[in-house]
Image 1: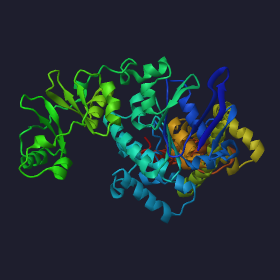
Image 2: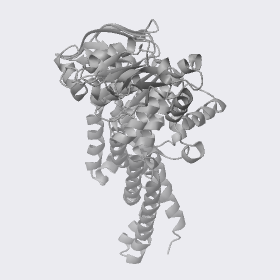
Image 3: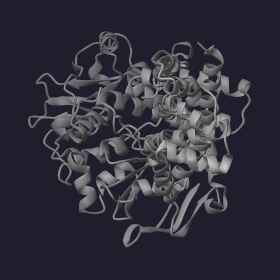
Length: 374
Length: 199
């Protein structure tokens, strides 16, 4: 959708962009990131021709933008900036309607758009449309900034550190709203930030730039796993934990609150307990508390007869692992195994817990981002 | 005792016509200075230079061009009123925050649309305060018109000086002062309303 071909830009002797080539696909959330002066904002501003390259070409849907009228081009691309830049002499409604009015939409067409967009961010029309920007909080102002960019339904929206000046809580909210809007309206978003956390949270693709060049262009996961060089690694900072996978063991990623039943339990009673625990399968243990096997609800329904002991139904298909294995080794097993969980055993073969996909994700998330994910 | 009303009205007309012309020329010059940066210095320098010419000398020079009468005093006042308007227009346009200009450009406004929809409205409070200064200044300078055969409140004052009649002098001077205070008060009130949302 957006293609850069050998784009270079320099001011005097200072090279800002050095032979840049890359492609952004339709509907993607692309985040440009890198140390200051790396050329990320310049790259962004080239897409709507606020800055023009010295050489090279930029195509949008196959059309060379240098052959387009810059004013018309900009009306077809949304633009959000860090300083918000709402027009203080216009009301919220007038601000949102700027581009539709430039495009000569009649009033009957742009009015409903304003109303709809305000609803999208839970700012009721009646309450907010006739306020001036100075009467809004910073977070509300930037919401309007985003809506203004969306008003004429441009397929592409450019965002230049839009949340950089907001407090962390507001920033979080807006990030989520923007991500939601992007998915819902299927926009292609090009987003500049210097905040890796923001990039990891929002991006489908991260473009890491340094000294006017692309160092790495990859998905957040890929970038976390294989940072291209030390600068990227440094930027990942605490998300990376020194570039090596953190030393997680199975016991760090398992859940310990599990339903264990003795072999001799009757099937009906067992179903009852599973109901109460809201689980689909149960771990069966021998009299000496060692692991015997698992039984799923399905097994009981298929083969169980009332009054029979649960021990007759156990299968030993569920893989077992030691709690002292490395979590990484178990990770692949969990993803490829047909079972949705692994049973974790202590050295004496008693049951320590379960590793489920949820417990694994939570633990990995916690290790990466440091916070408990709810 | 002469009937003052016709003098007051003529005085007002002279001042307002001169200010009107000055506003048009001044704003245009301010915009030119803003758009073509290399012209800013010469334009500001010219408007400042005009103000340094003593009123009497300026009127004498203009008299050669326009002859005796109201045209000359209007031309003189127009030139005097230029500086505050040009300077404030230019300053006002320059000081619109860069982020707002960037946003306006990025939204796809043409140069003229940016000027009329964003930059001039935001600069207007400052432009208006320039106009206020011009009007108040012109009210008192217009008195000089009597020396080049123009009308207005200069006439009763001049008569008073010639006849050494203080009451006569004051009957011309006091309306000038009252008008100046009135305009200043009214226009300041408007100015405050204009700056309410510009933040």
